[in-house]
Image 1 (cartoon, rainbow, N blue to C red):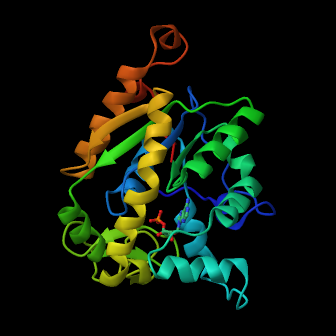
Image 2 (cartoon, rainbow, N blue to C red):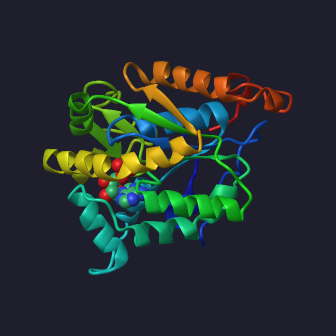
Length: 265
Ligand code: AMP
């Protein structure tokens, strides 16, 4: 069951309807990897396994489509950039994340998906975490060939209400075009149209590799091959996180697989 993320999707004035899950260890993770690699699916599976709330900056922009942004407003500019597969300007993205800092402090933990995407965003996130005396546990970098990424993106369909993600071939819904979770309509996002896909992959290569280097210097990066079924990839991810758990931390917090609270997610 996807988590309610009202505070993240709508910003400072909104509250999540569910309290954070009770977790024995609070995980704070960043997911890196090109568009189409399956970060959103893995973020949801990590939420089920560890309780960490999936926080995607792309979802903030998609959620904002449900209301009409004033022409020329920051959100309208962001959505236009997004439709062309281009990155949204740092100032705008950072403004949205700064406003949502309470989500970083959530005691259920978080998995950031799609943020940070530039070195400036990564440095700003370091500053925000430092202010709250928090630190990241790991930065998971998912890897996949460009050919497979293009195929995955063009077949992707998303629920216009709950943002659950399907694939016409690899993860079809029970009824074509209808969300399994809430019954609303599945749509292809404008930025998954073929013309936007290449631009997105190029934008990723240009900006995000620097982000990975930034985190590699902090010894936070865990690389995972994103081939195969989502359940196989999440198993590798949880194993890799368990392997990173320091012996001194094990006394207080068991390895990830032992952490899954039955009501998490
Ligand atoms: P995603 O769902 O993460 O692939 O994001 C969809 C689109 O939203 C991207 O192609 C960008 O246009 C925009 N976007 C999301 N997150 C960011 C970010 N951190 N920085 C810049 N643009 C972003």
